Image (cartoon, rainbow, N blue to C red):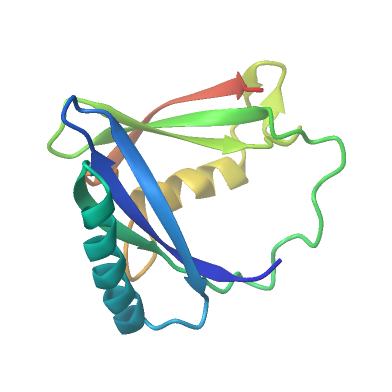
Length: 154
């Protein structure tokens, strides 16, 4: 599988319906090159659509740590996952992220089993690393884990 970056343009129509247009680029493209391409594509996209372009974002390929598993765990299906819900700073609403493929080590039937790994996941989601931390899509800081629920999705 080739490594690529992408630029995603967000659009909205007159009635509020939202869509996205995704343009892939070589993973070797610099941020400046991606900005230049974004400008060019946005101008041409604007000319051919009646929708309002409300934003553009970049998805960059990153290097993964060498300590990750080399293959998927046998008999662990993507359908079984965990919804992790967080309280947010400056918001009465919660933020939920779903991790698919929950292992037997962290799931007992329909219950989440607290482990060192689940605790480490919650810590990195709340505190990040030494350089940055996760937020919700509106840049609200995640301030507390409020719920964790095992889920099954097709």
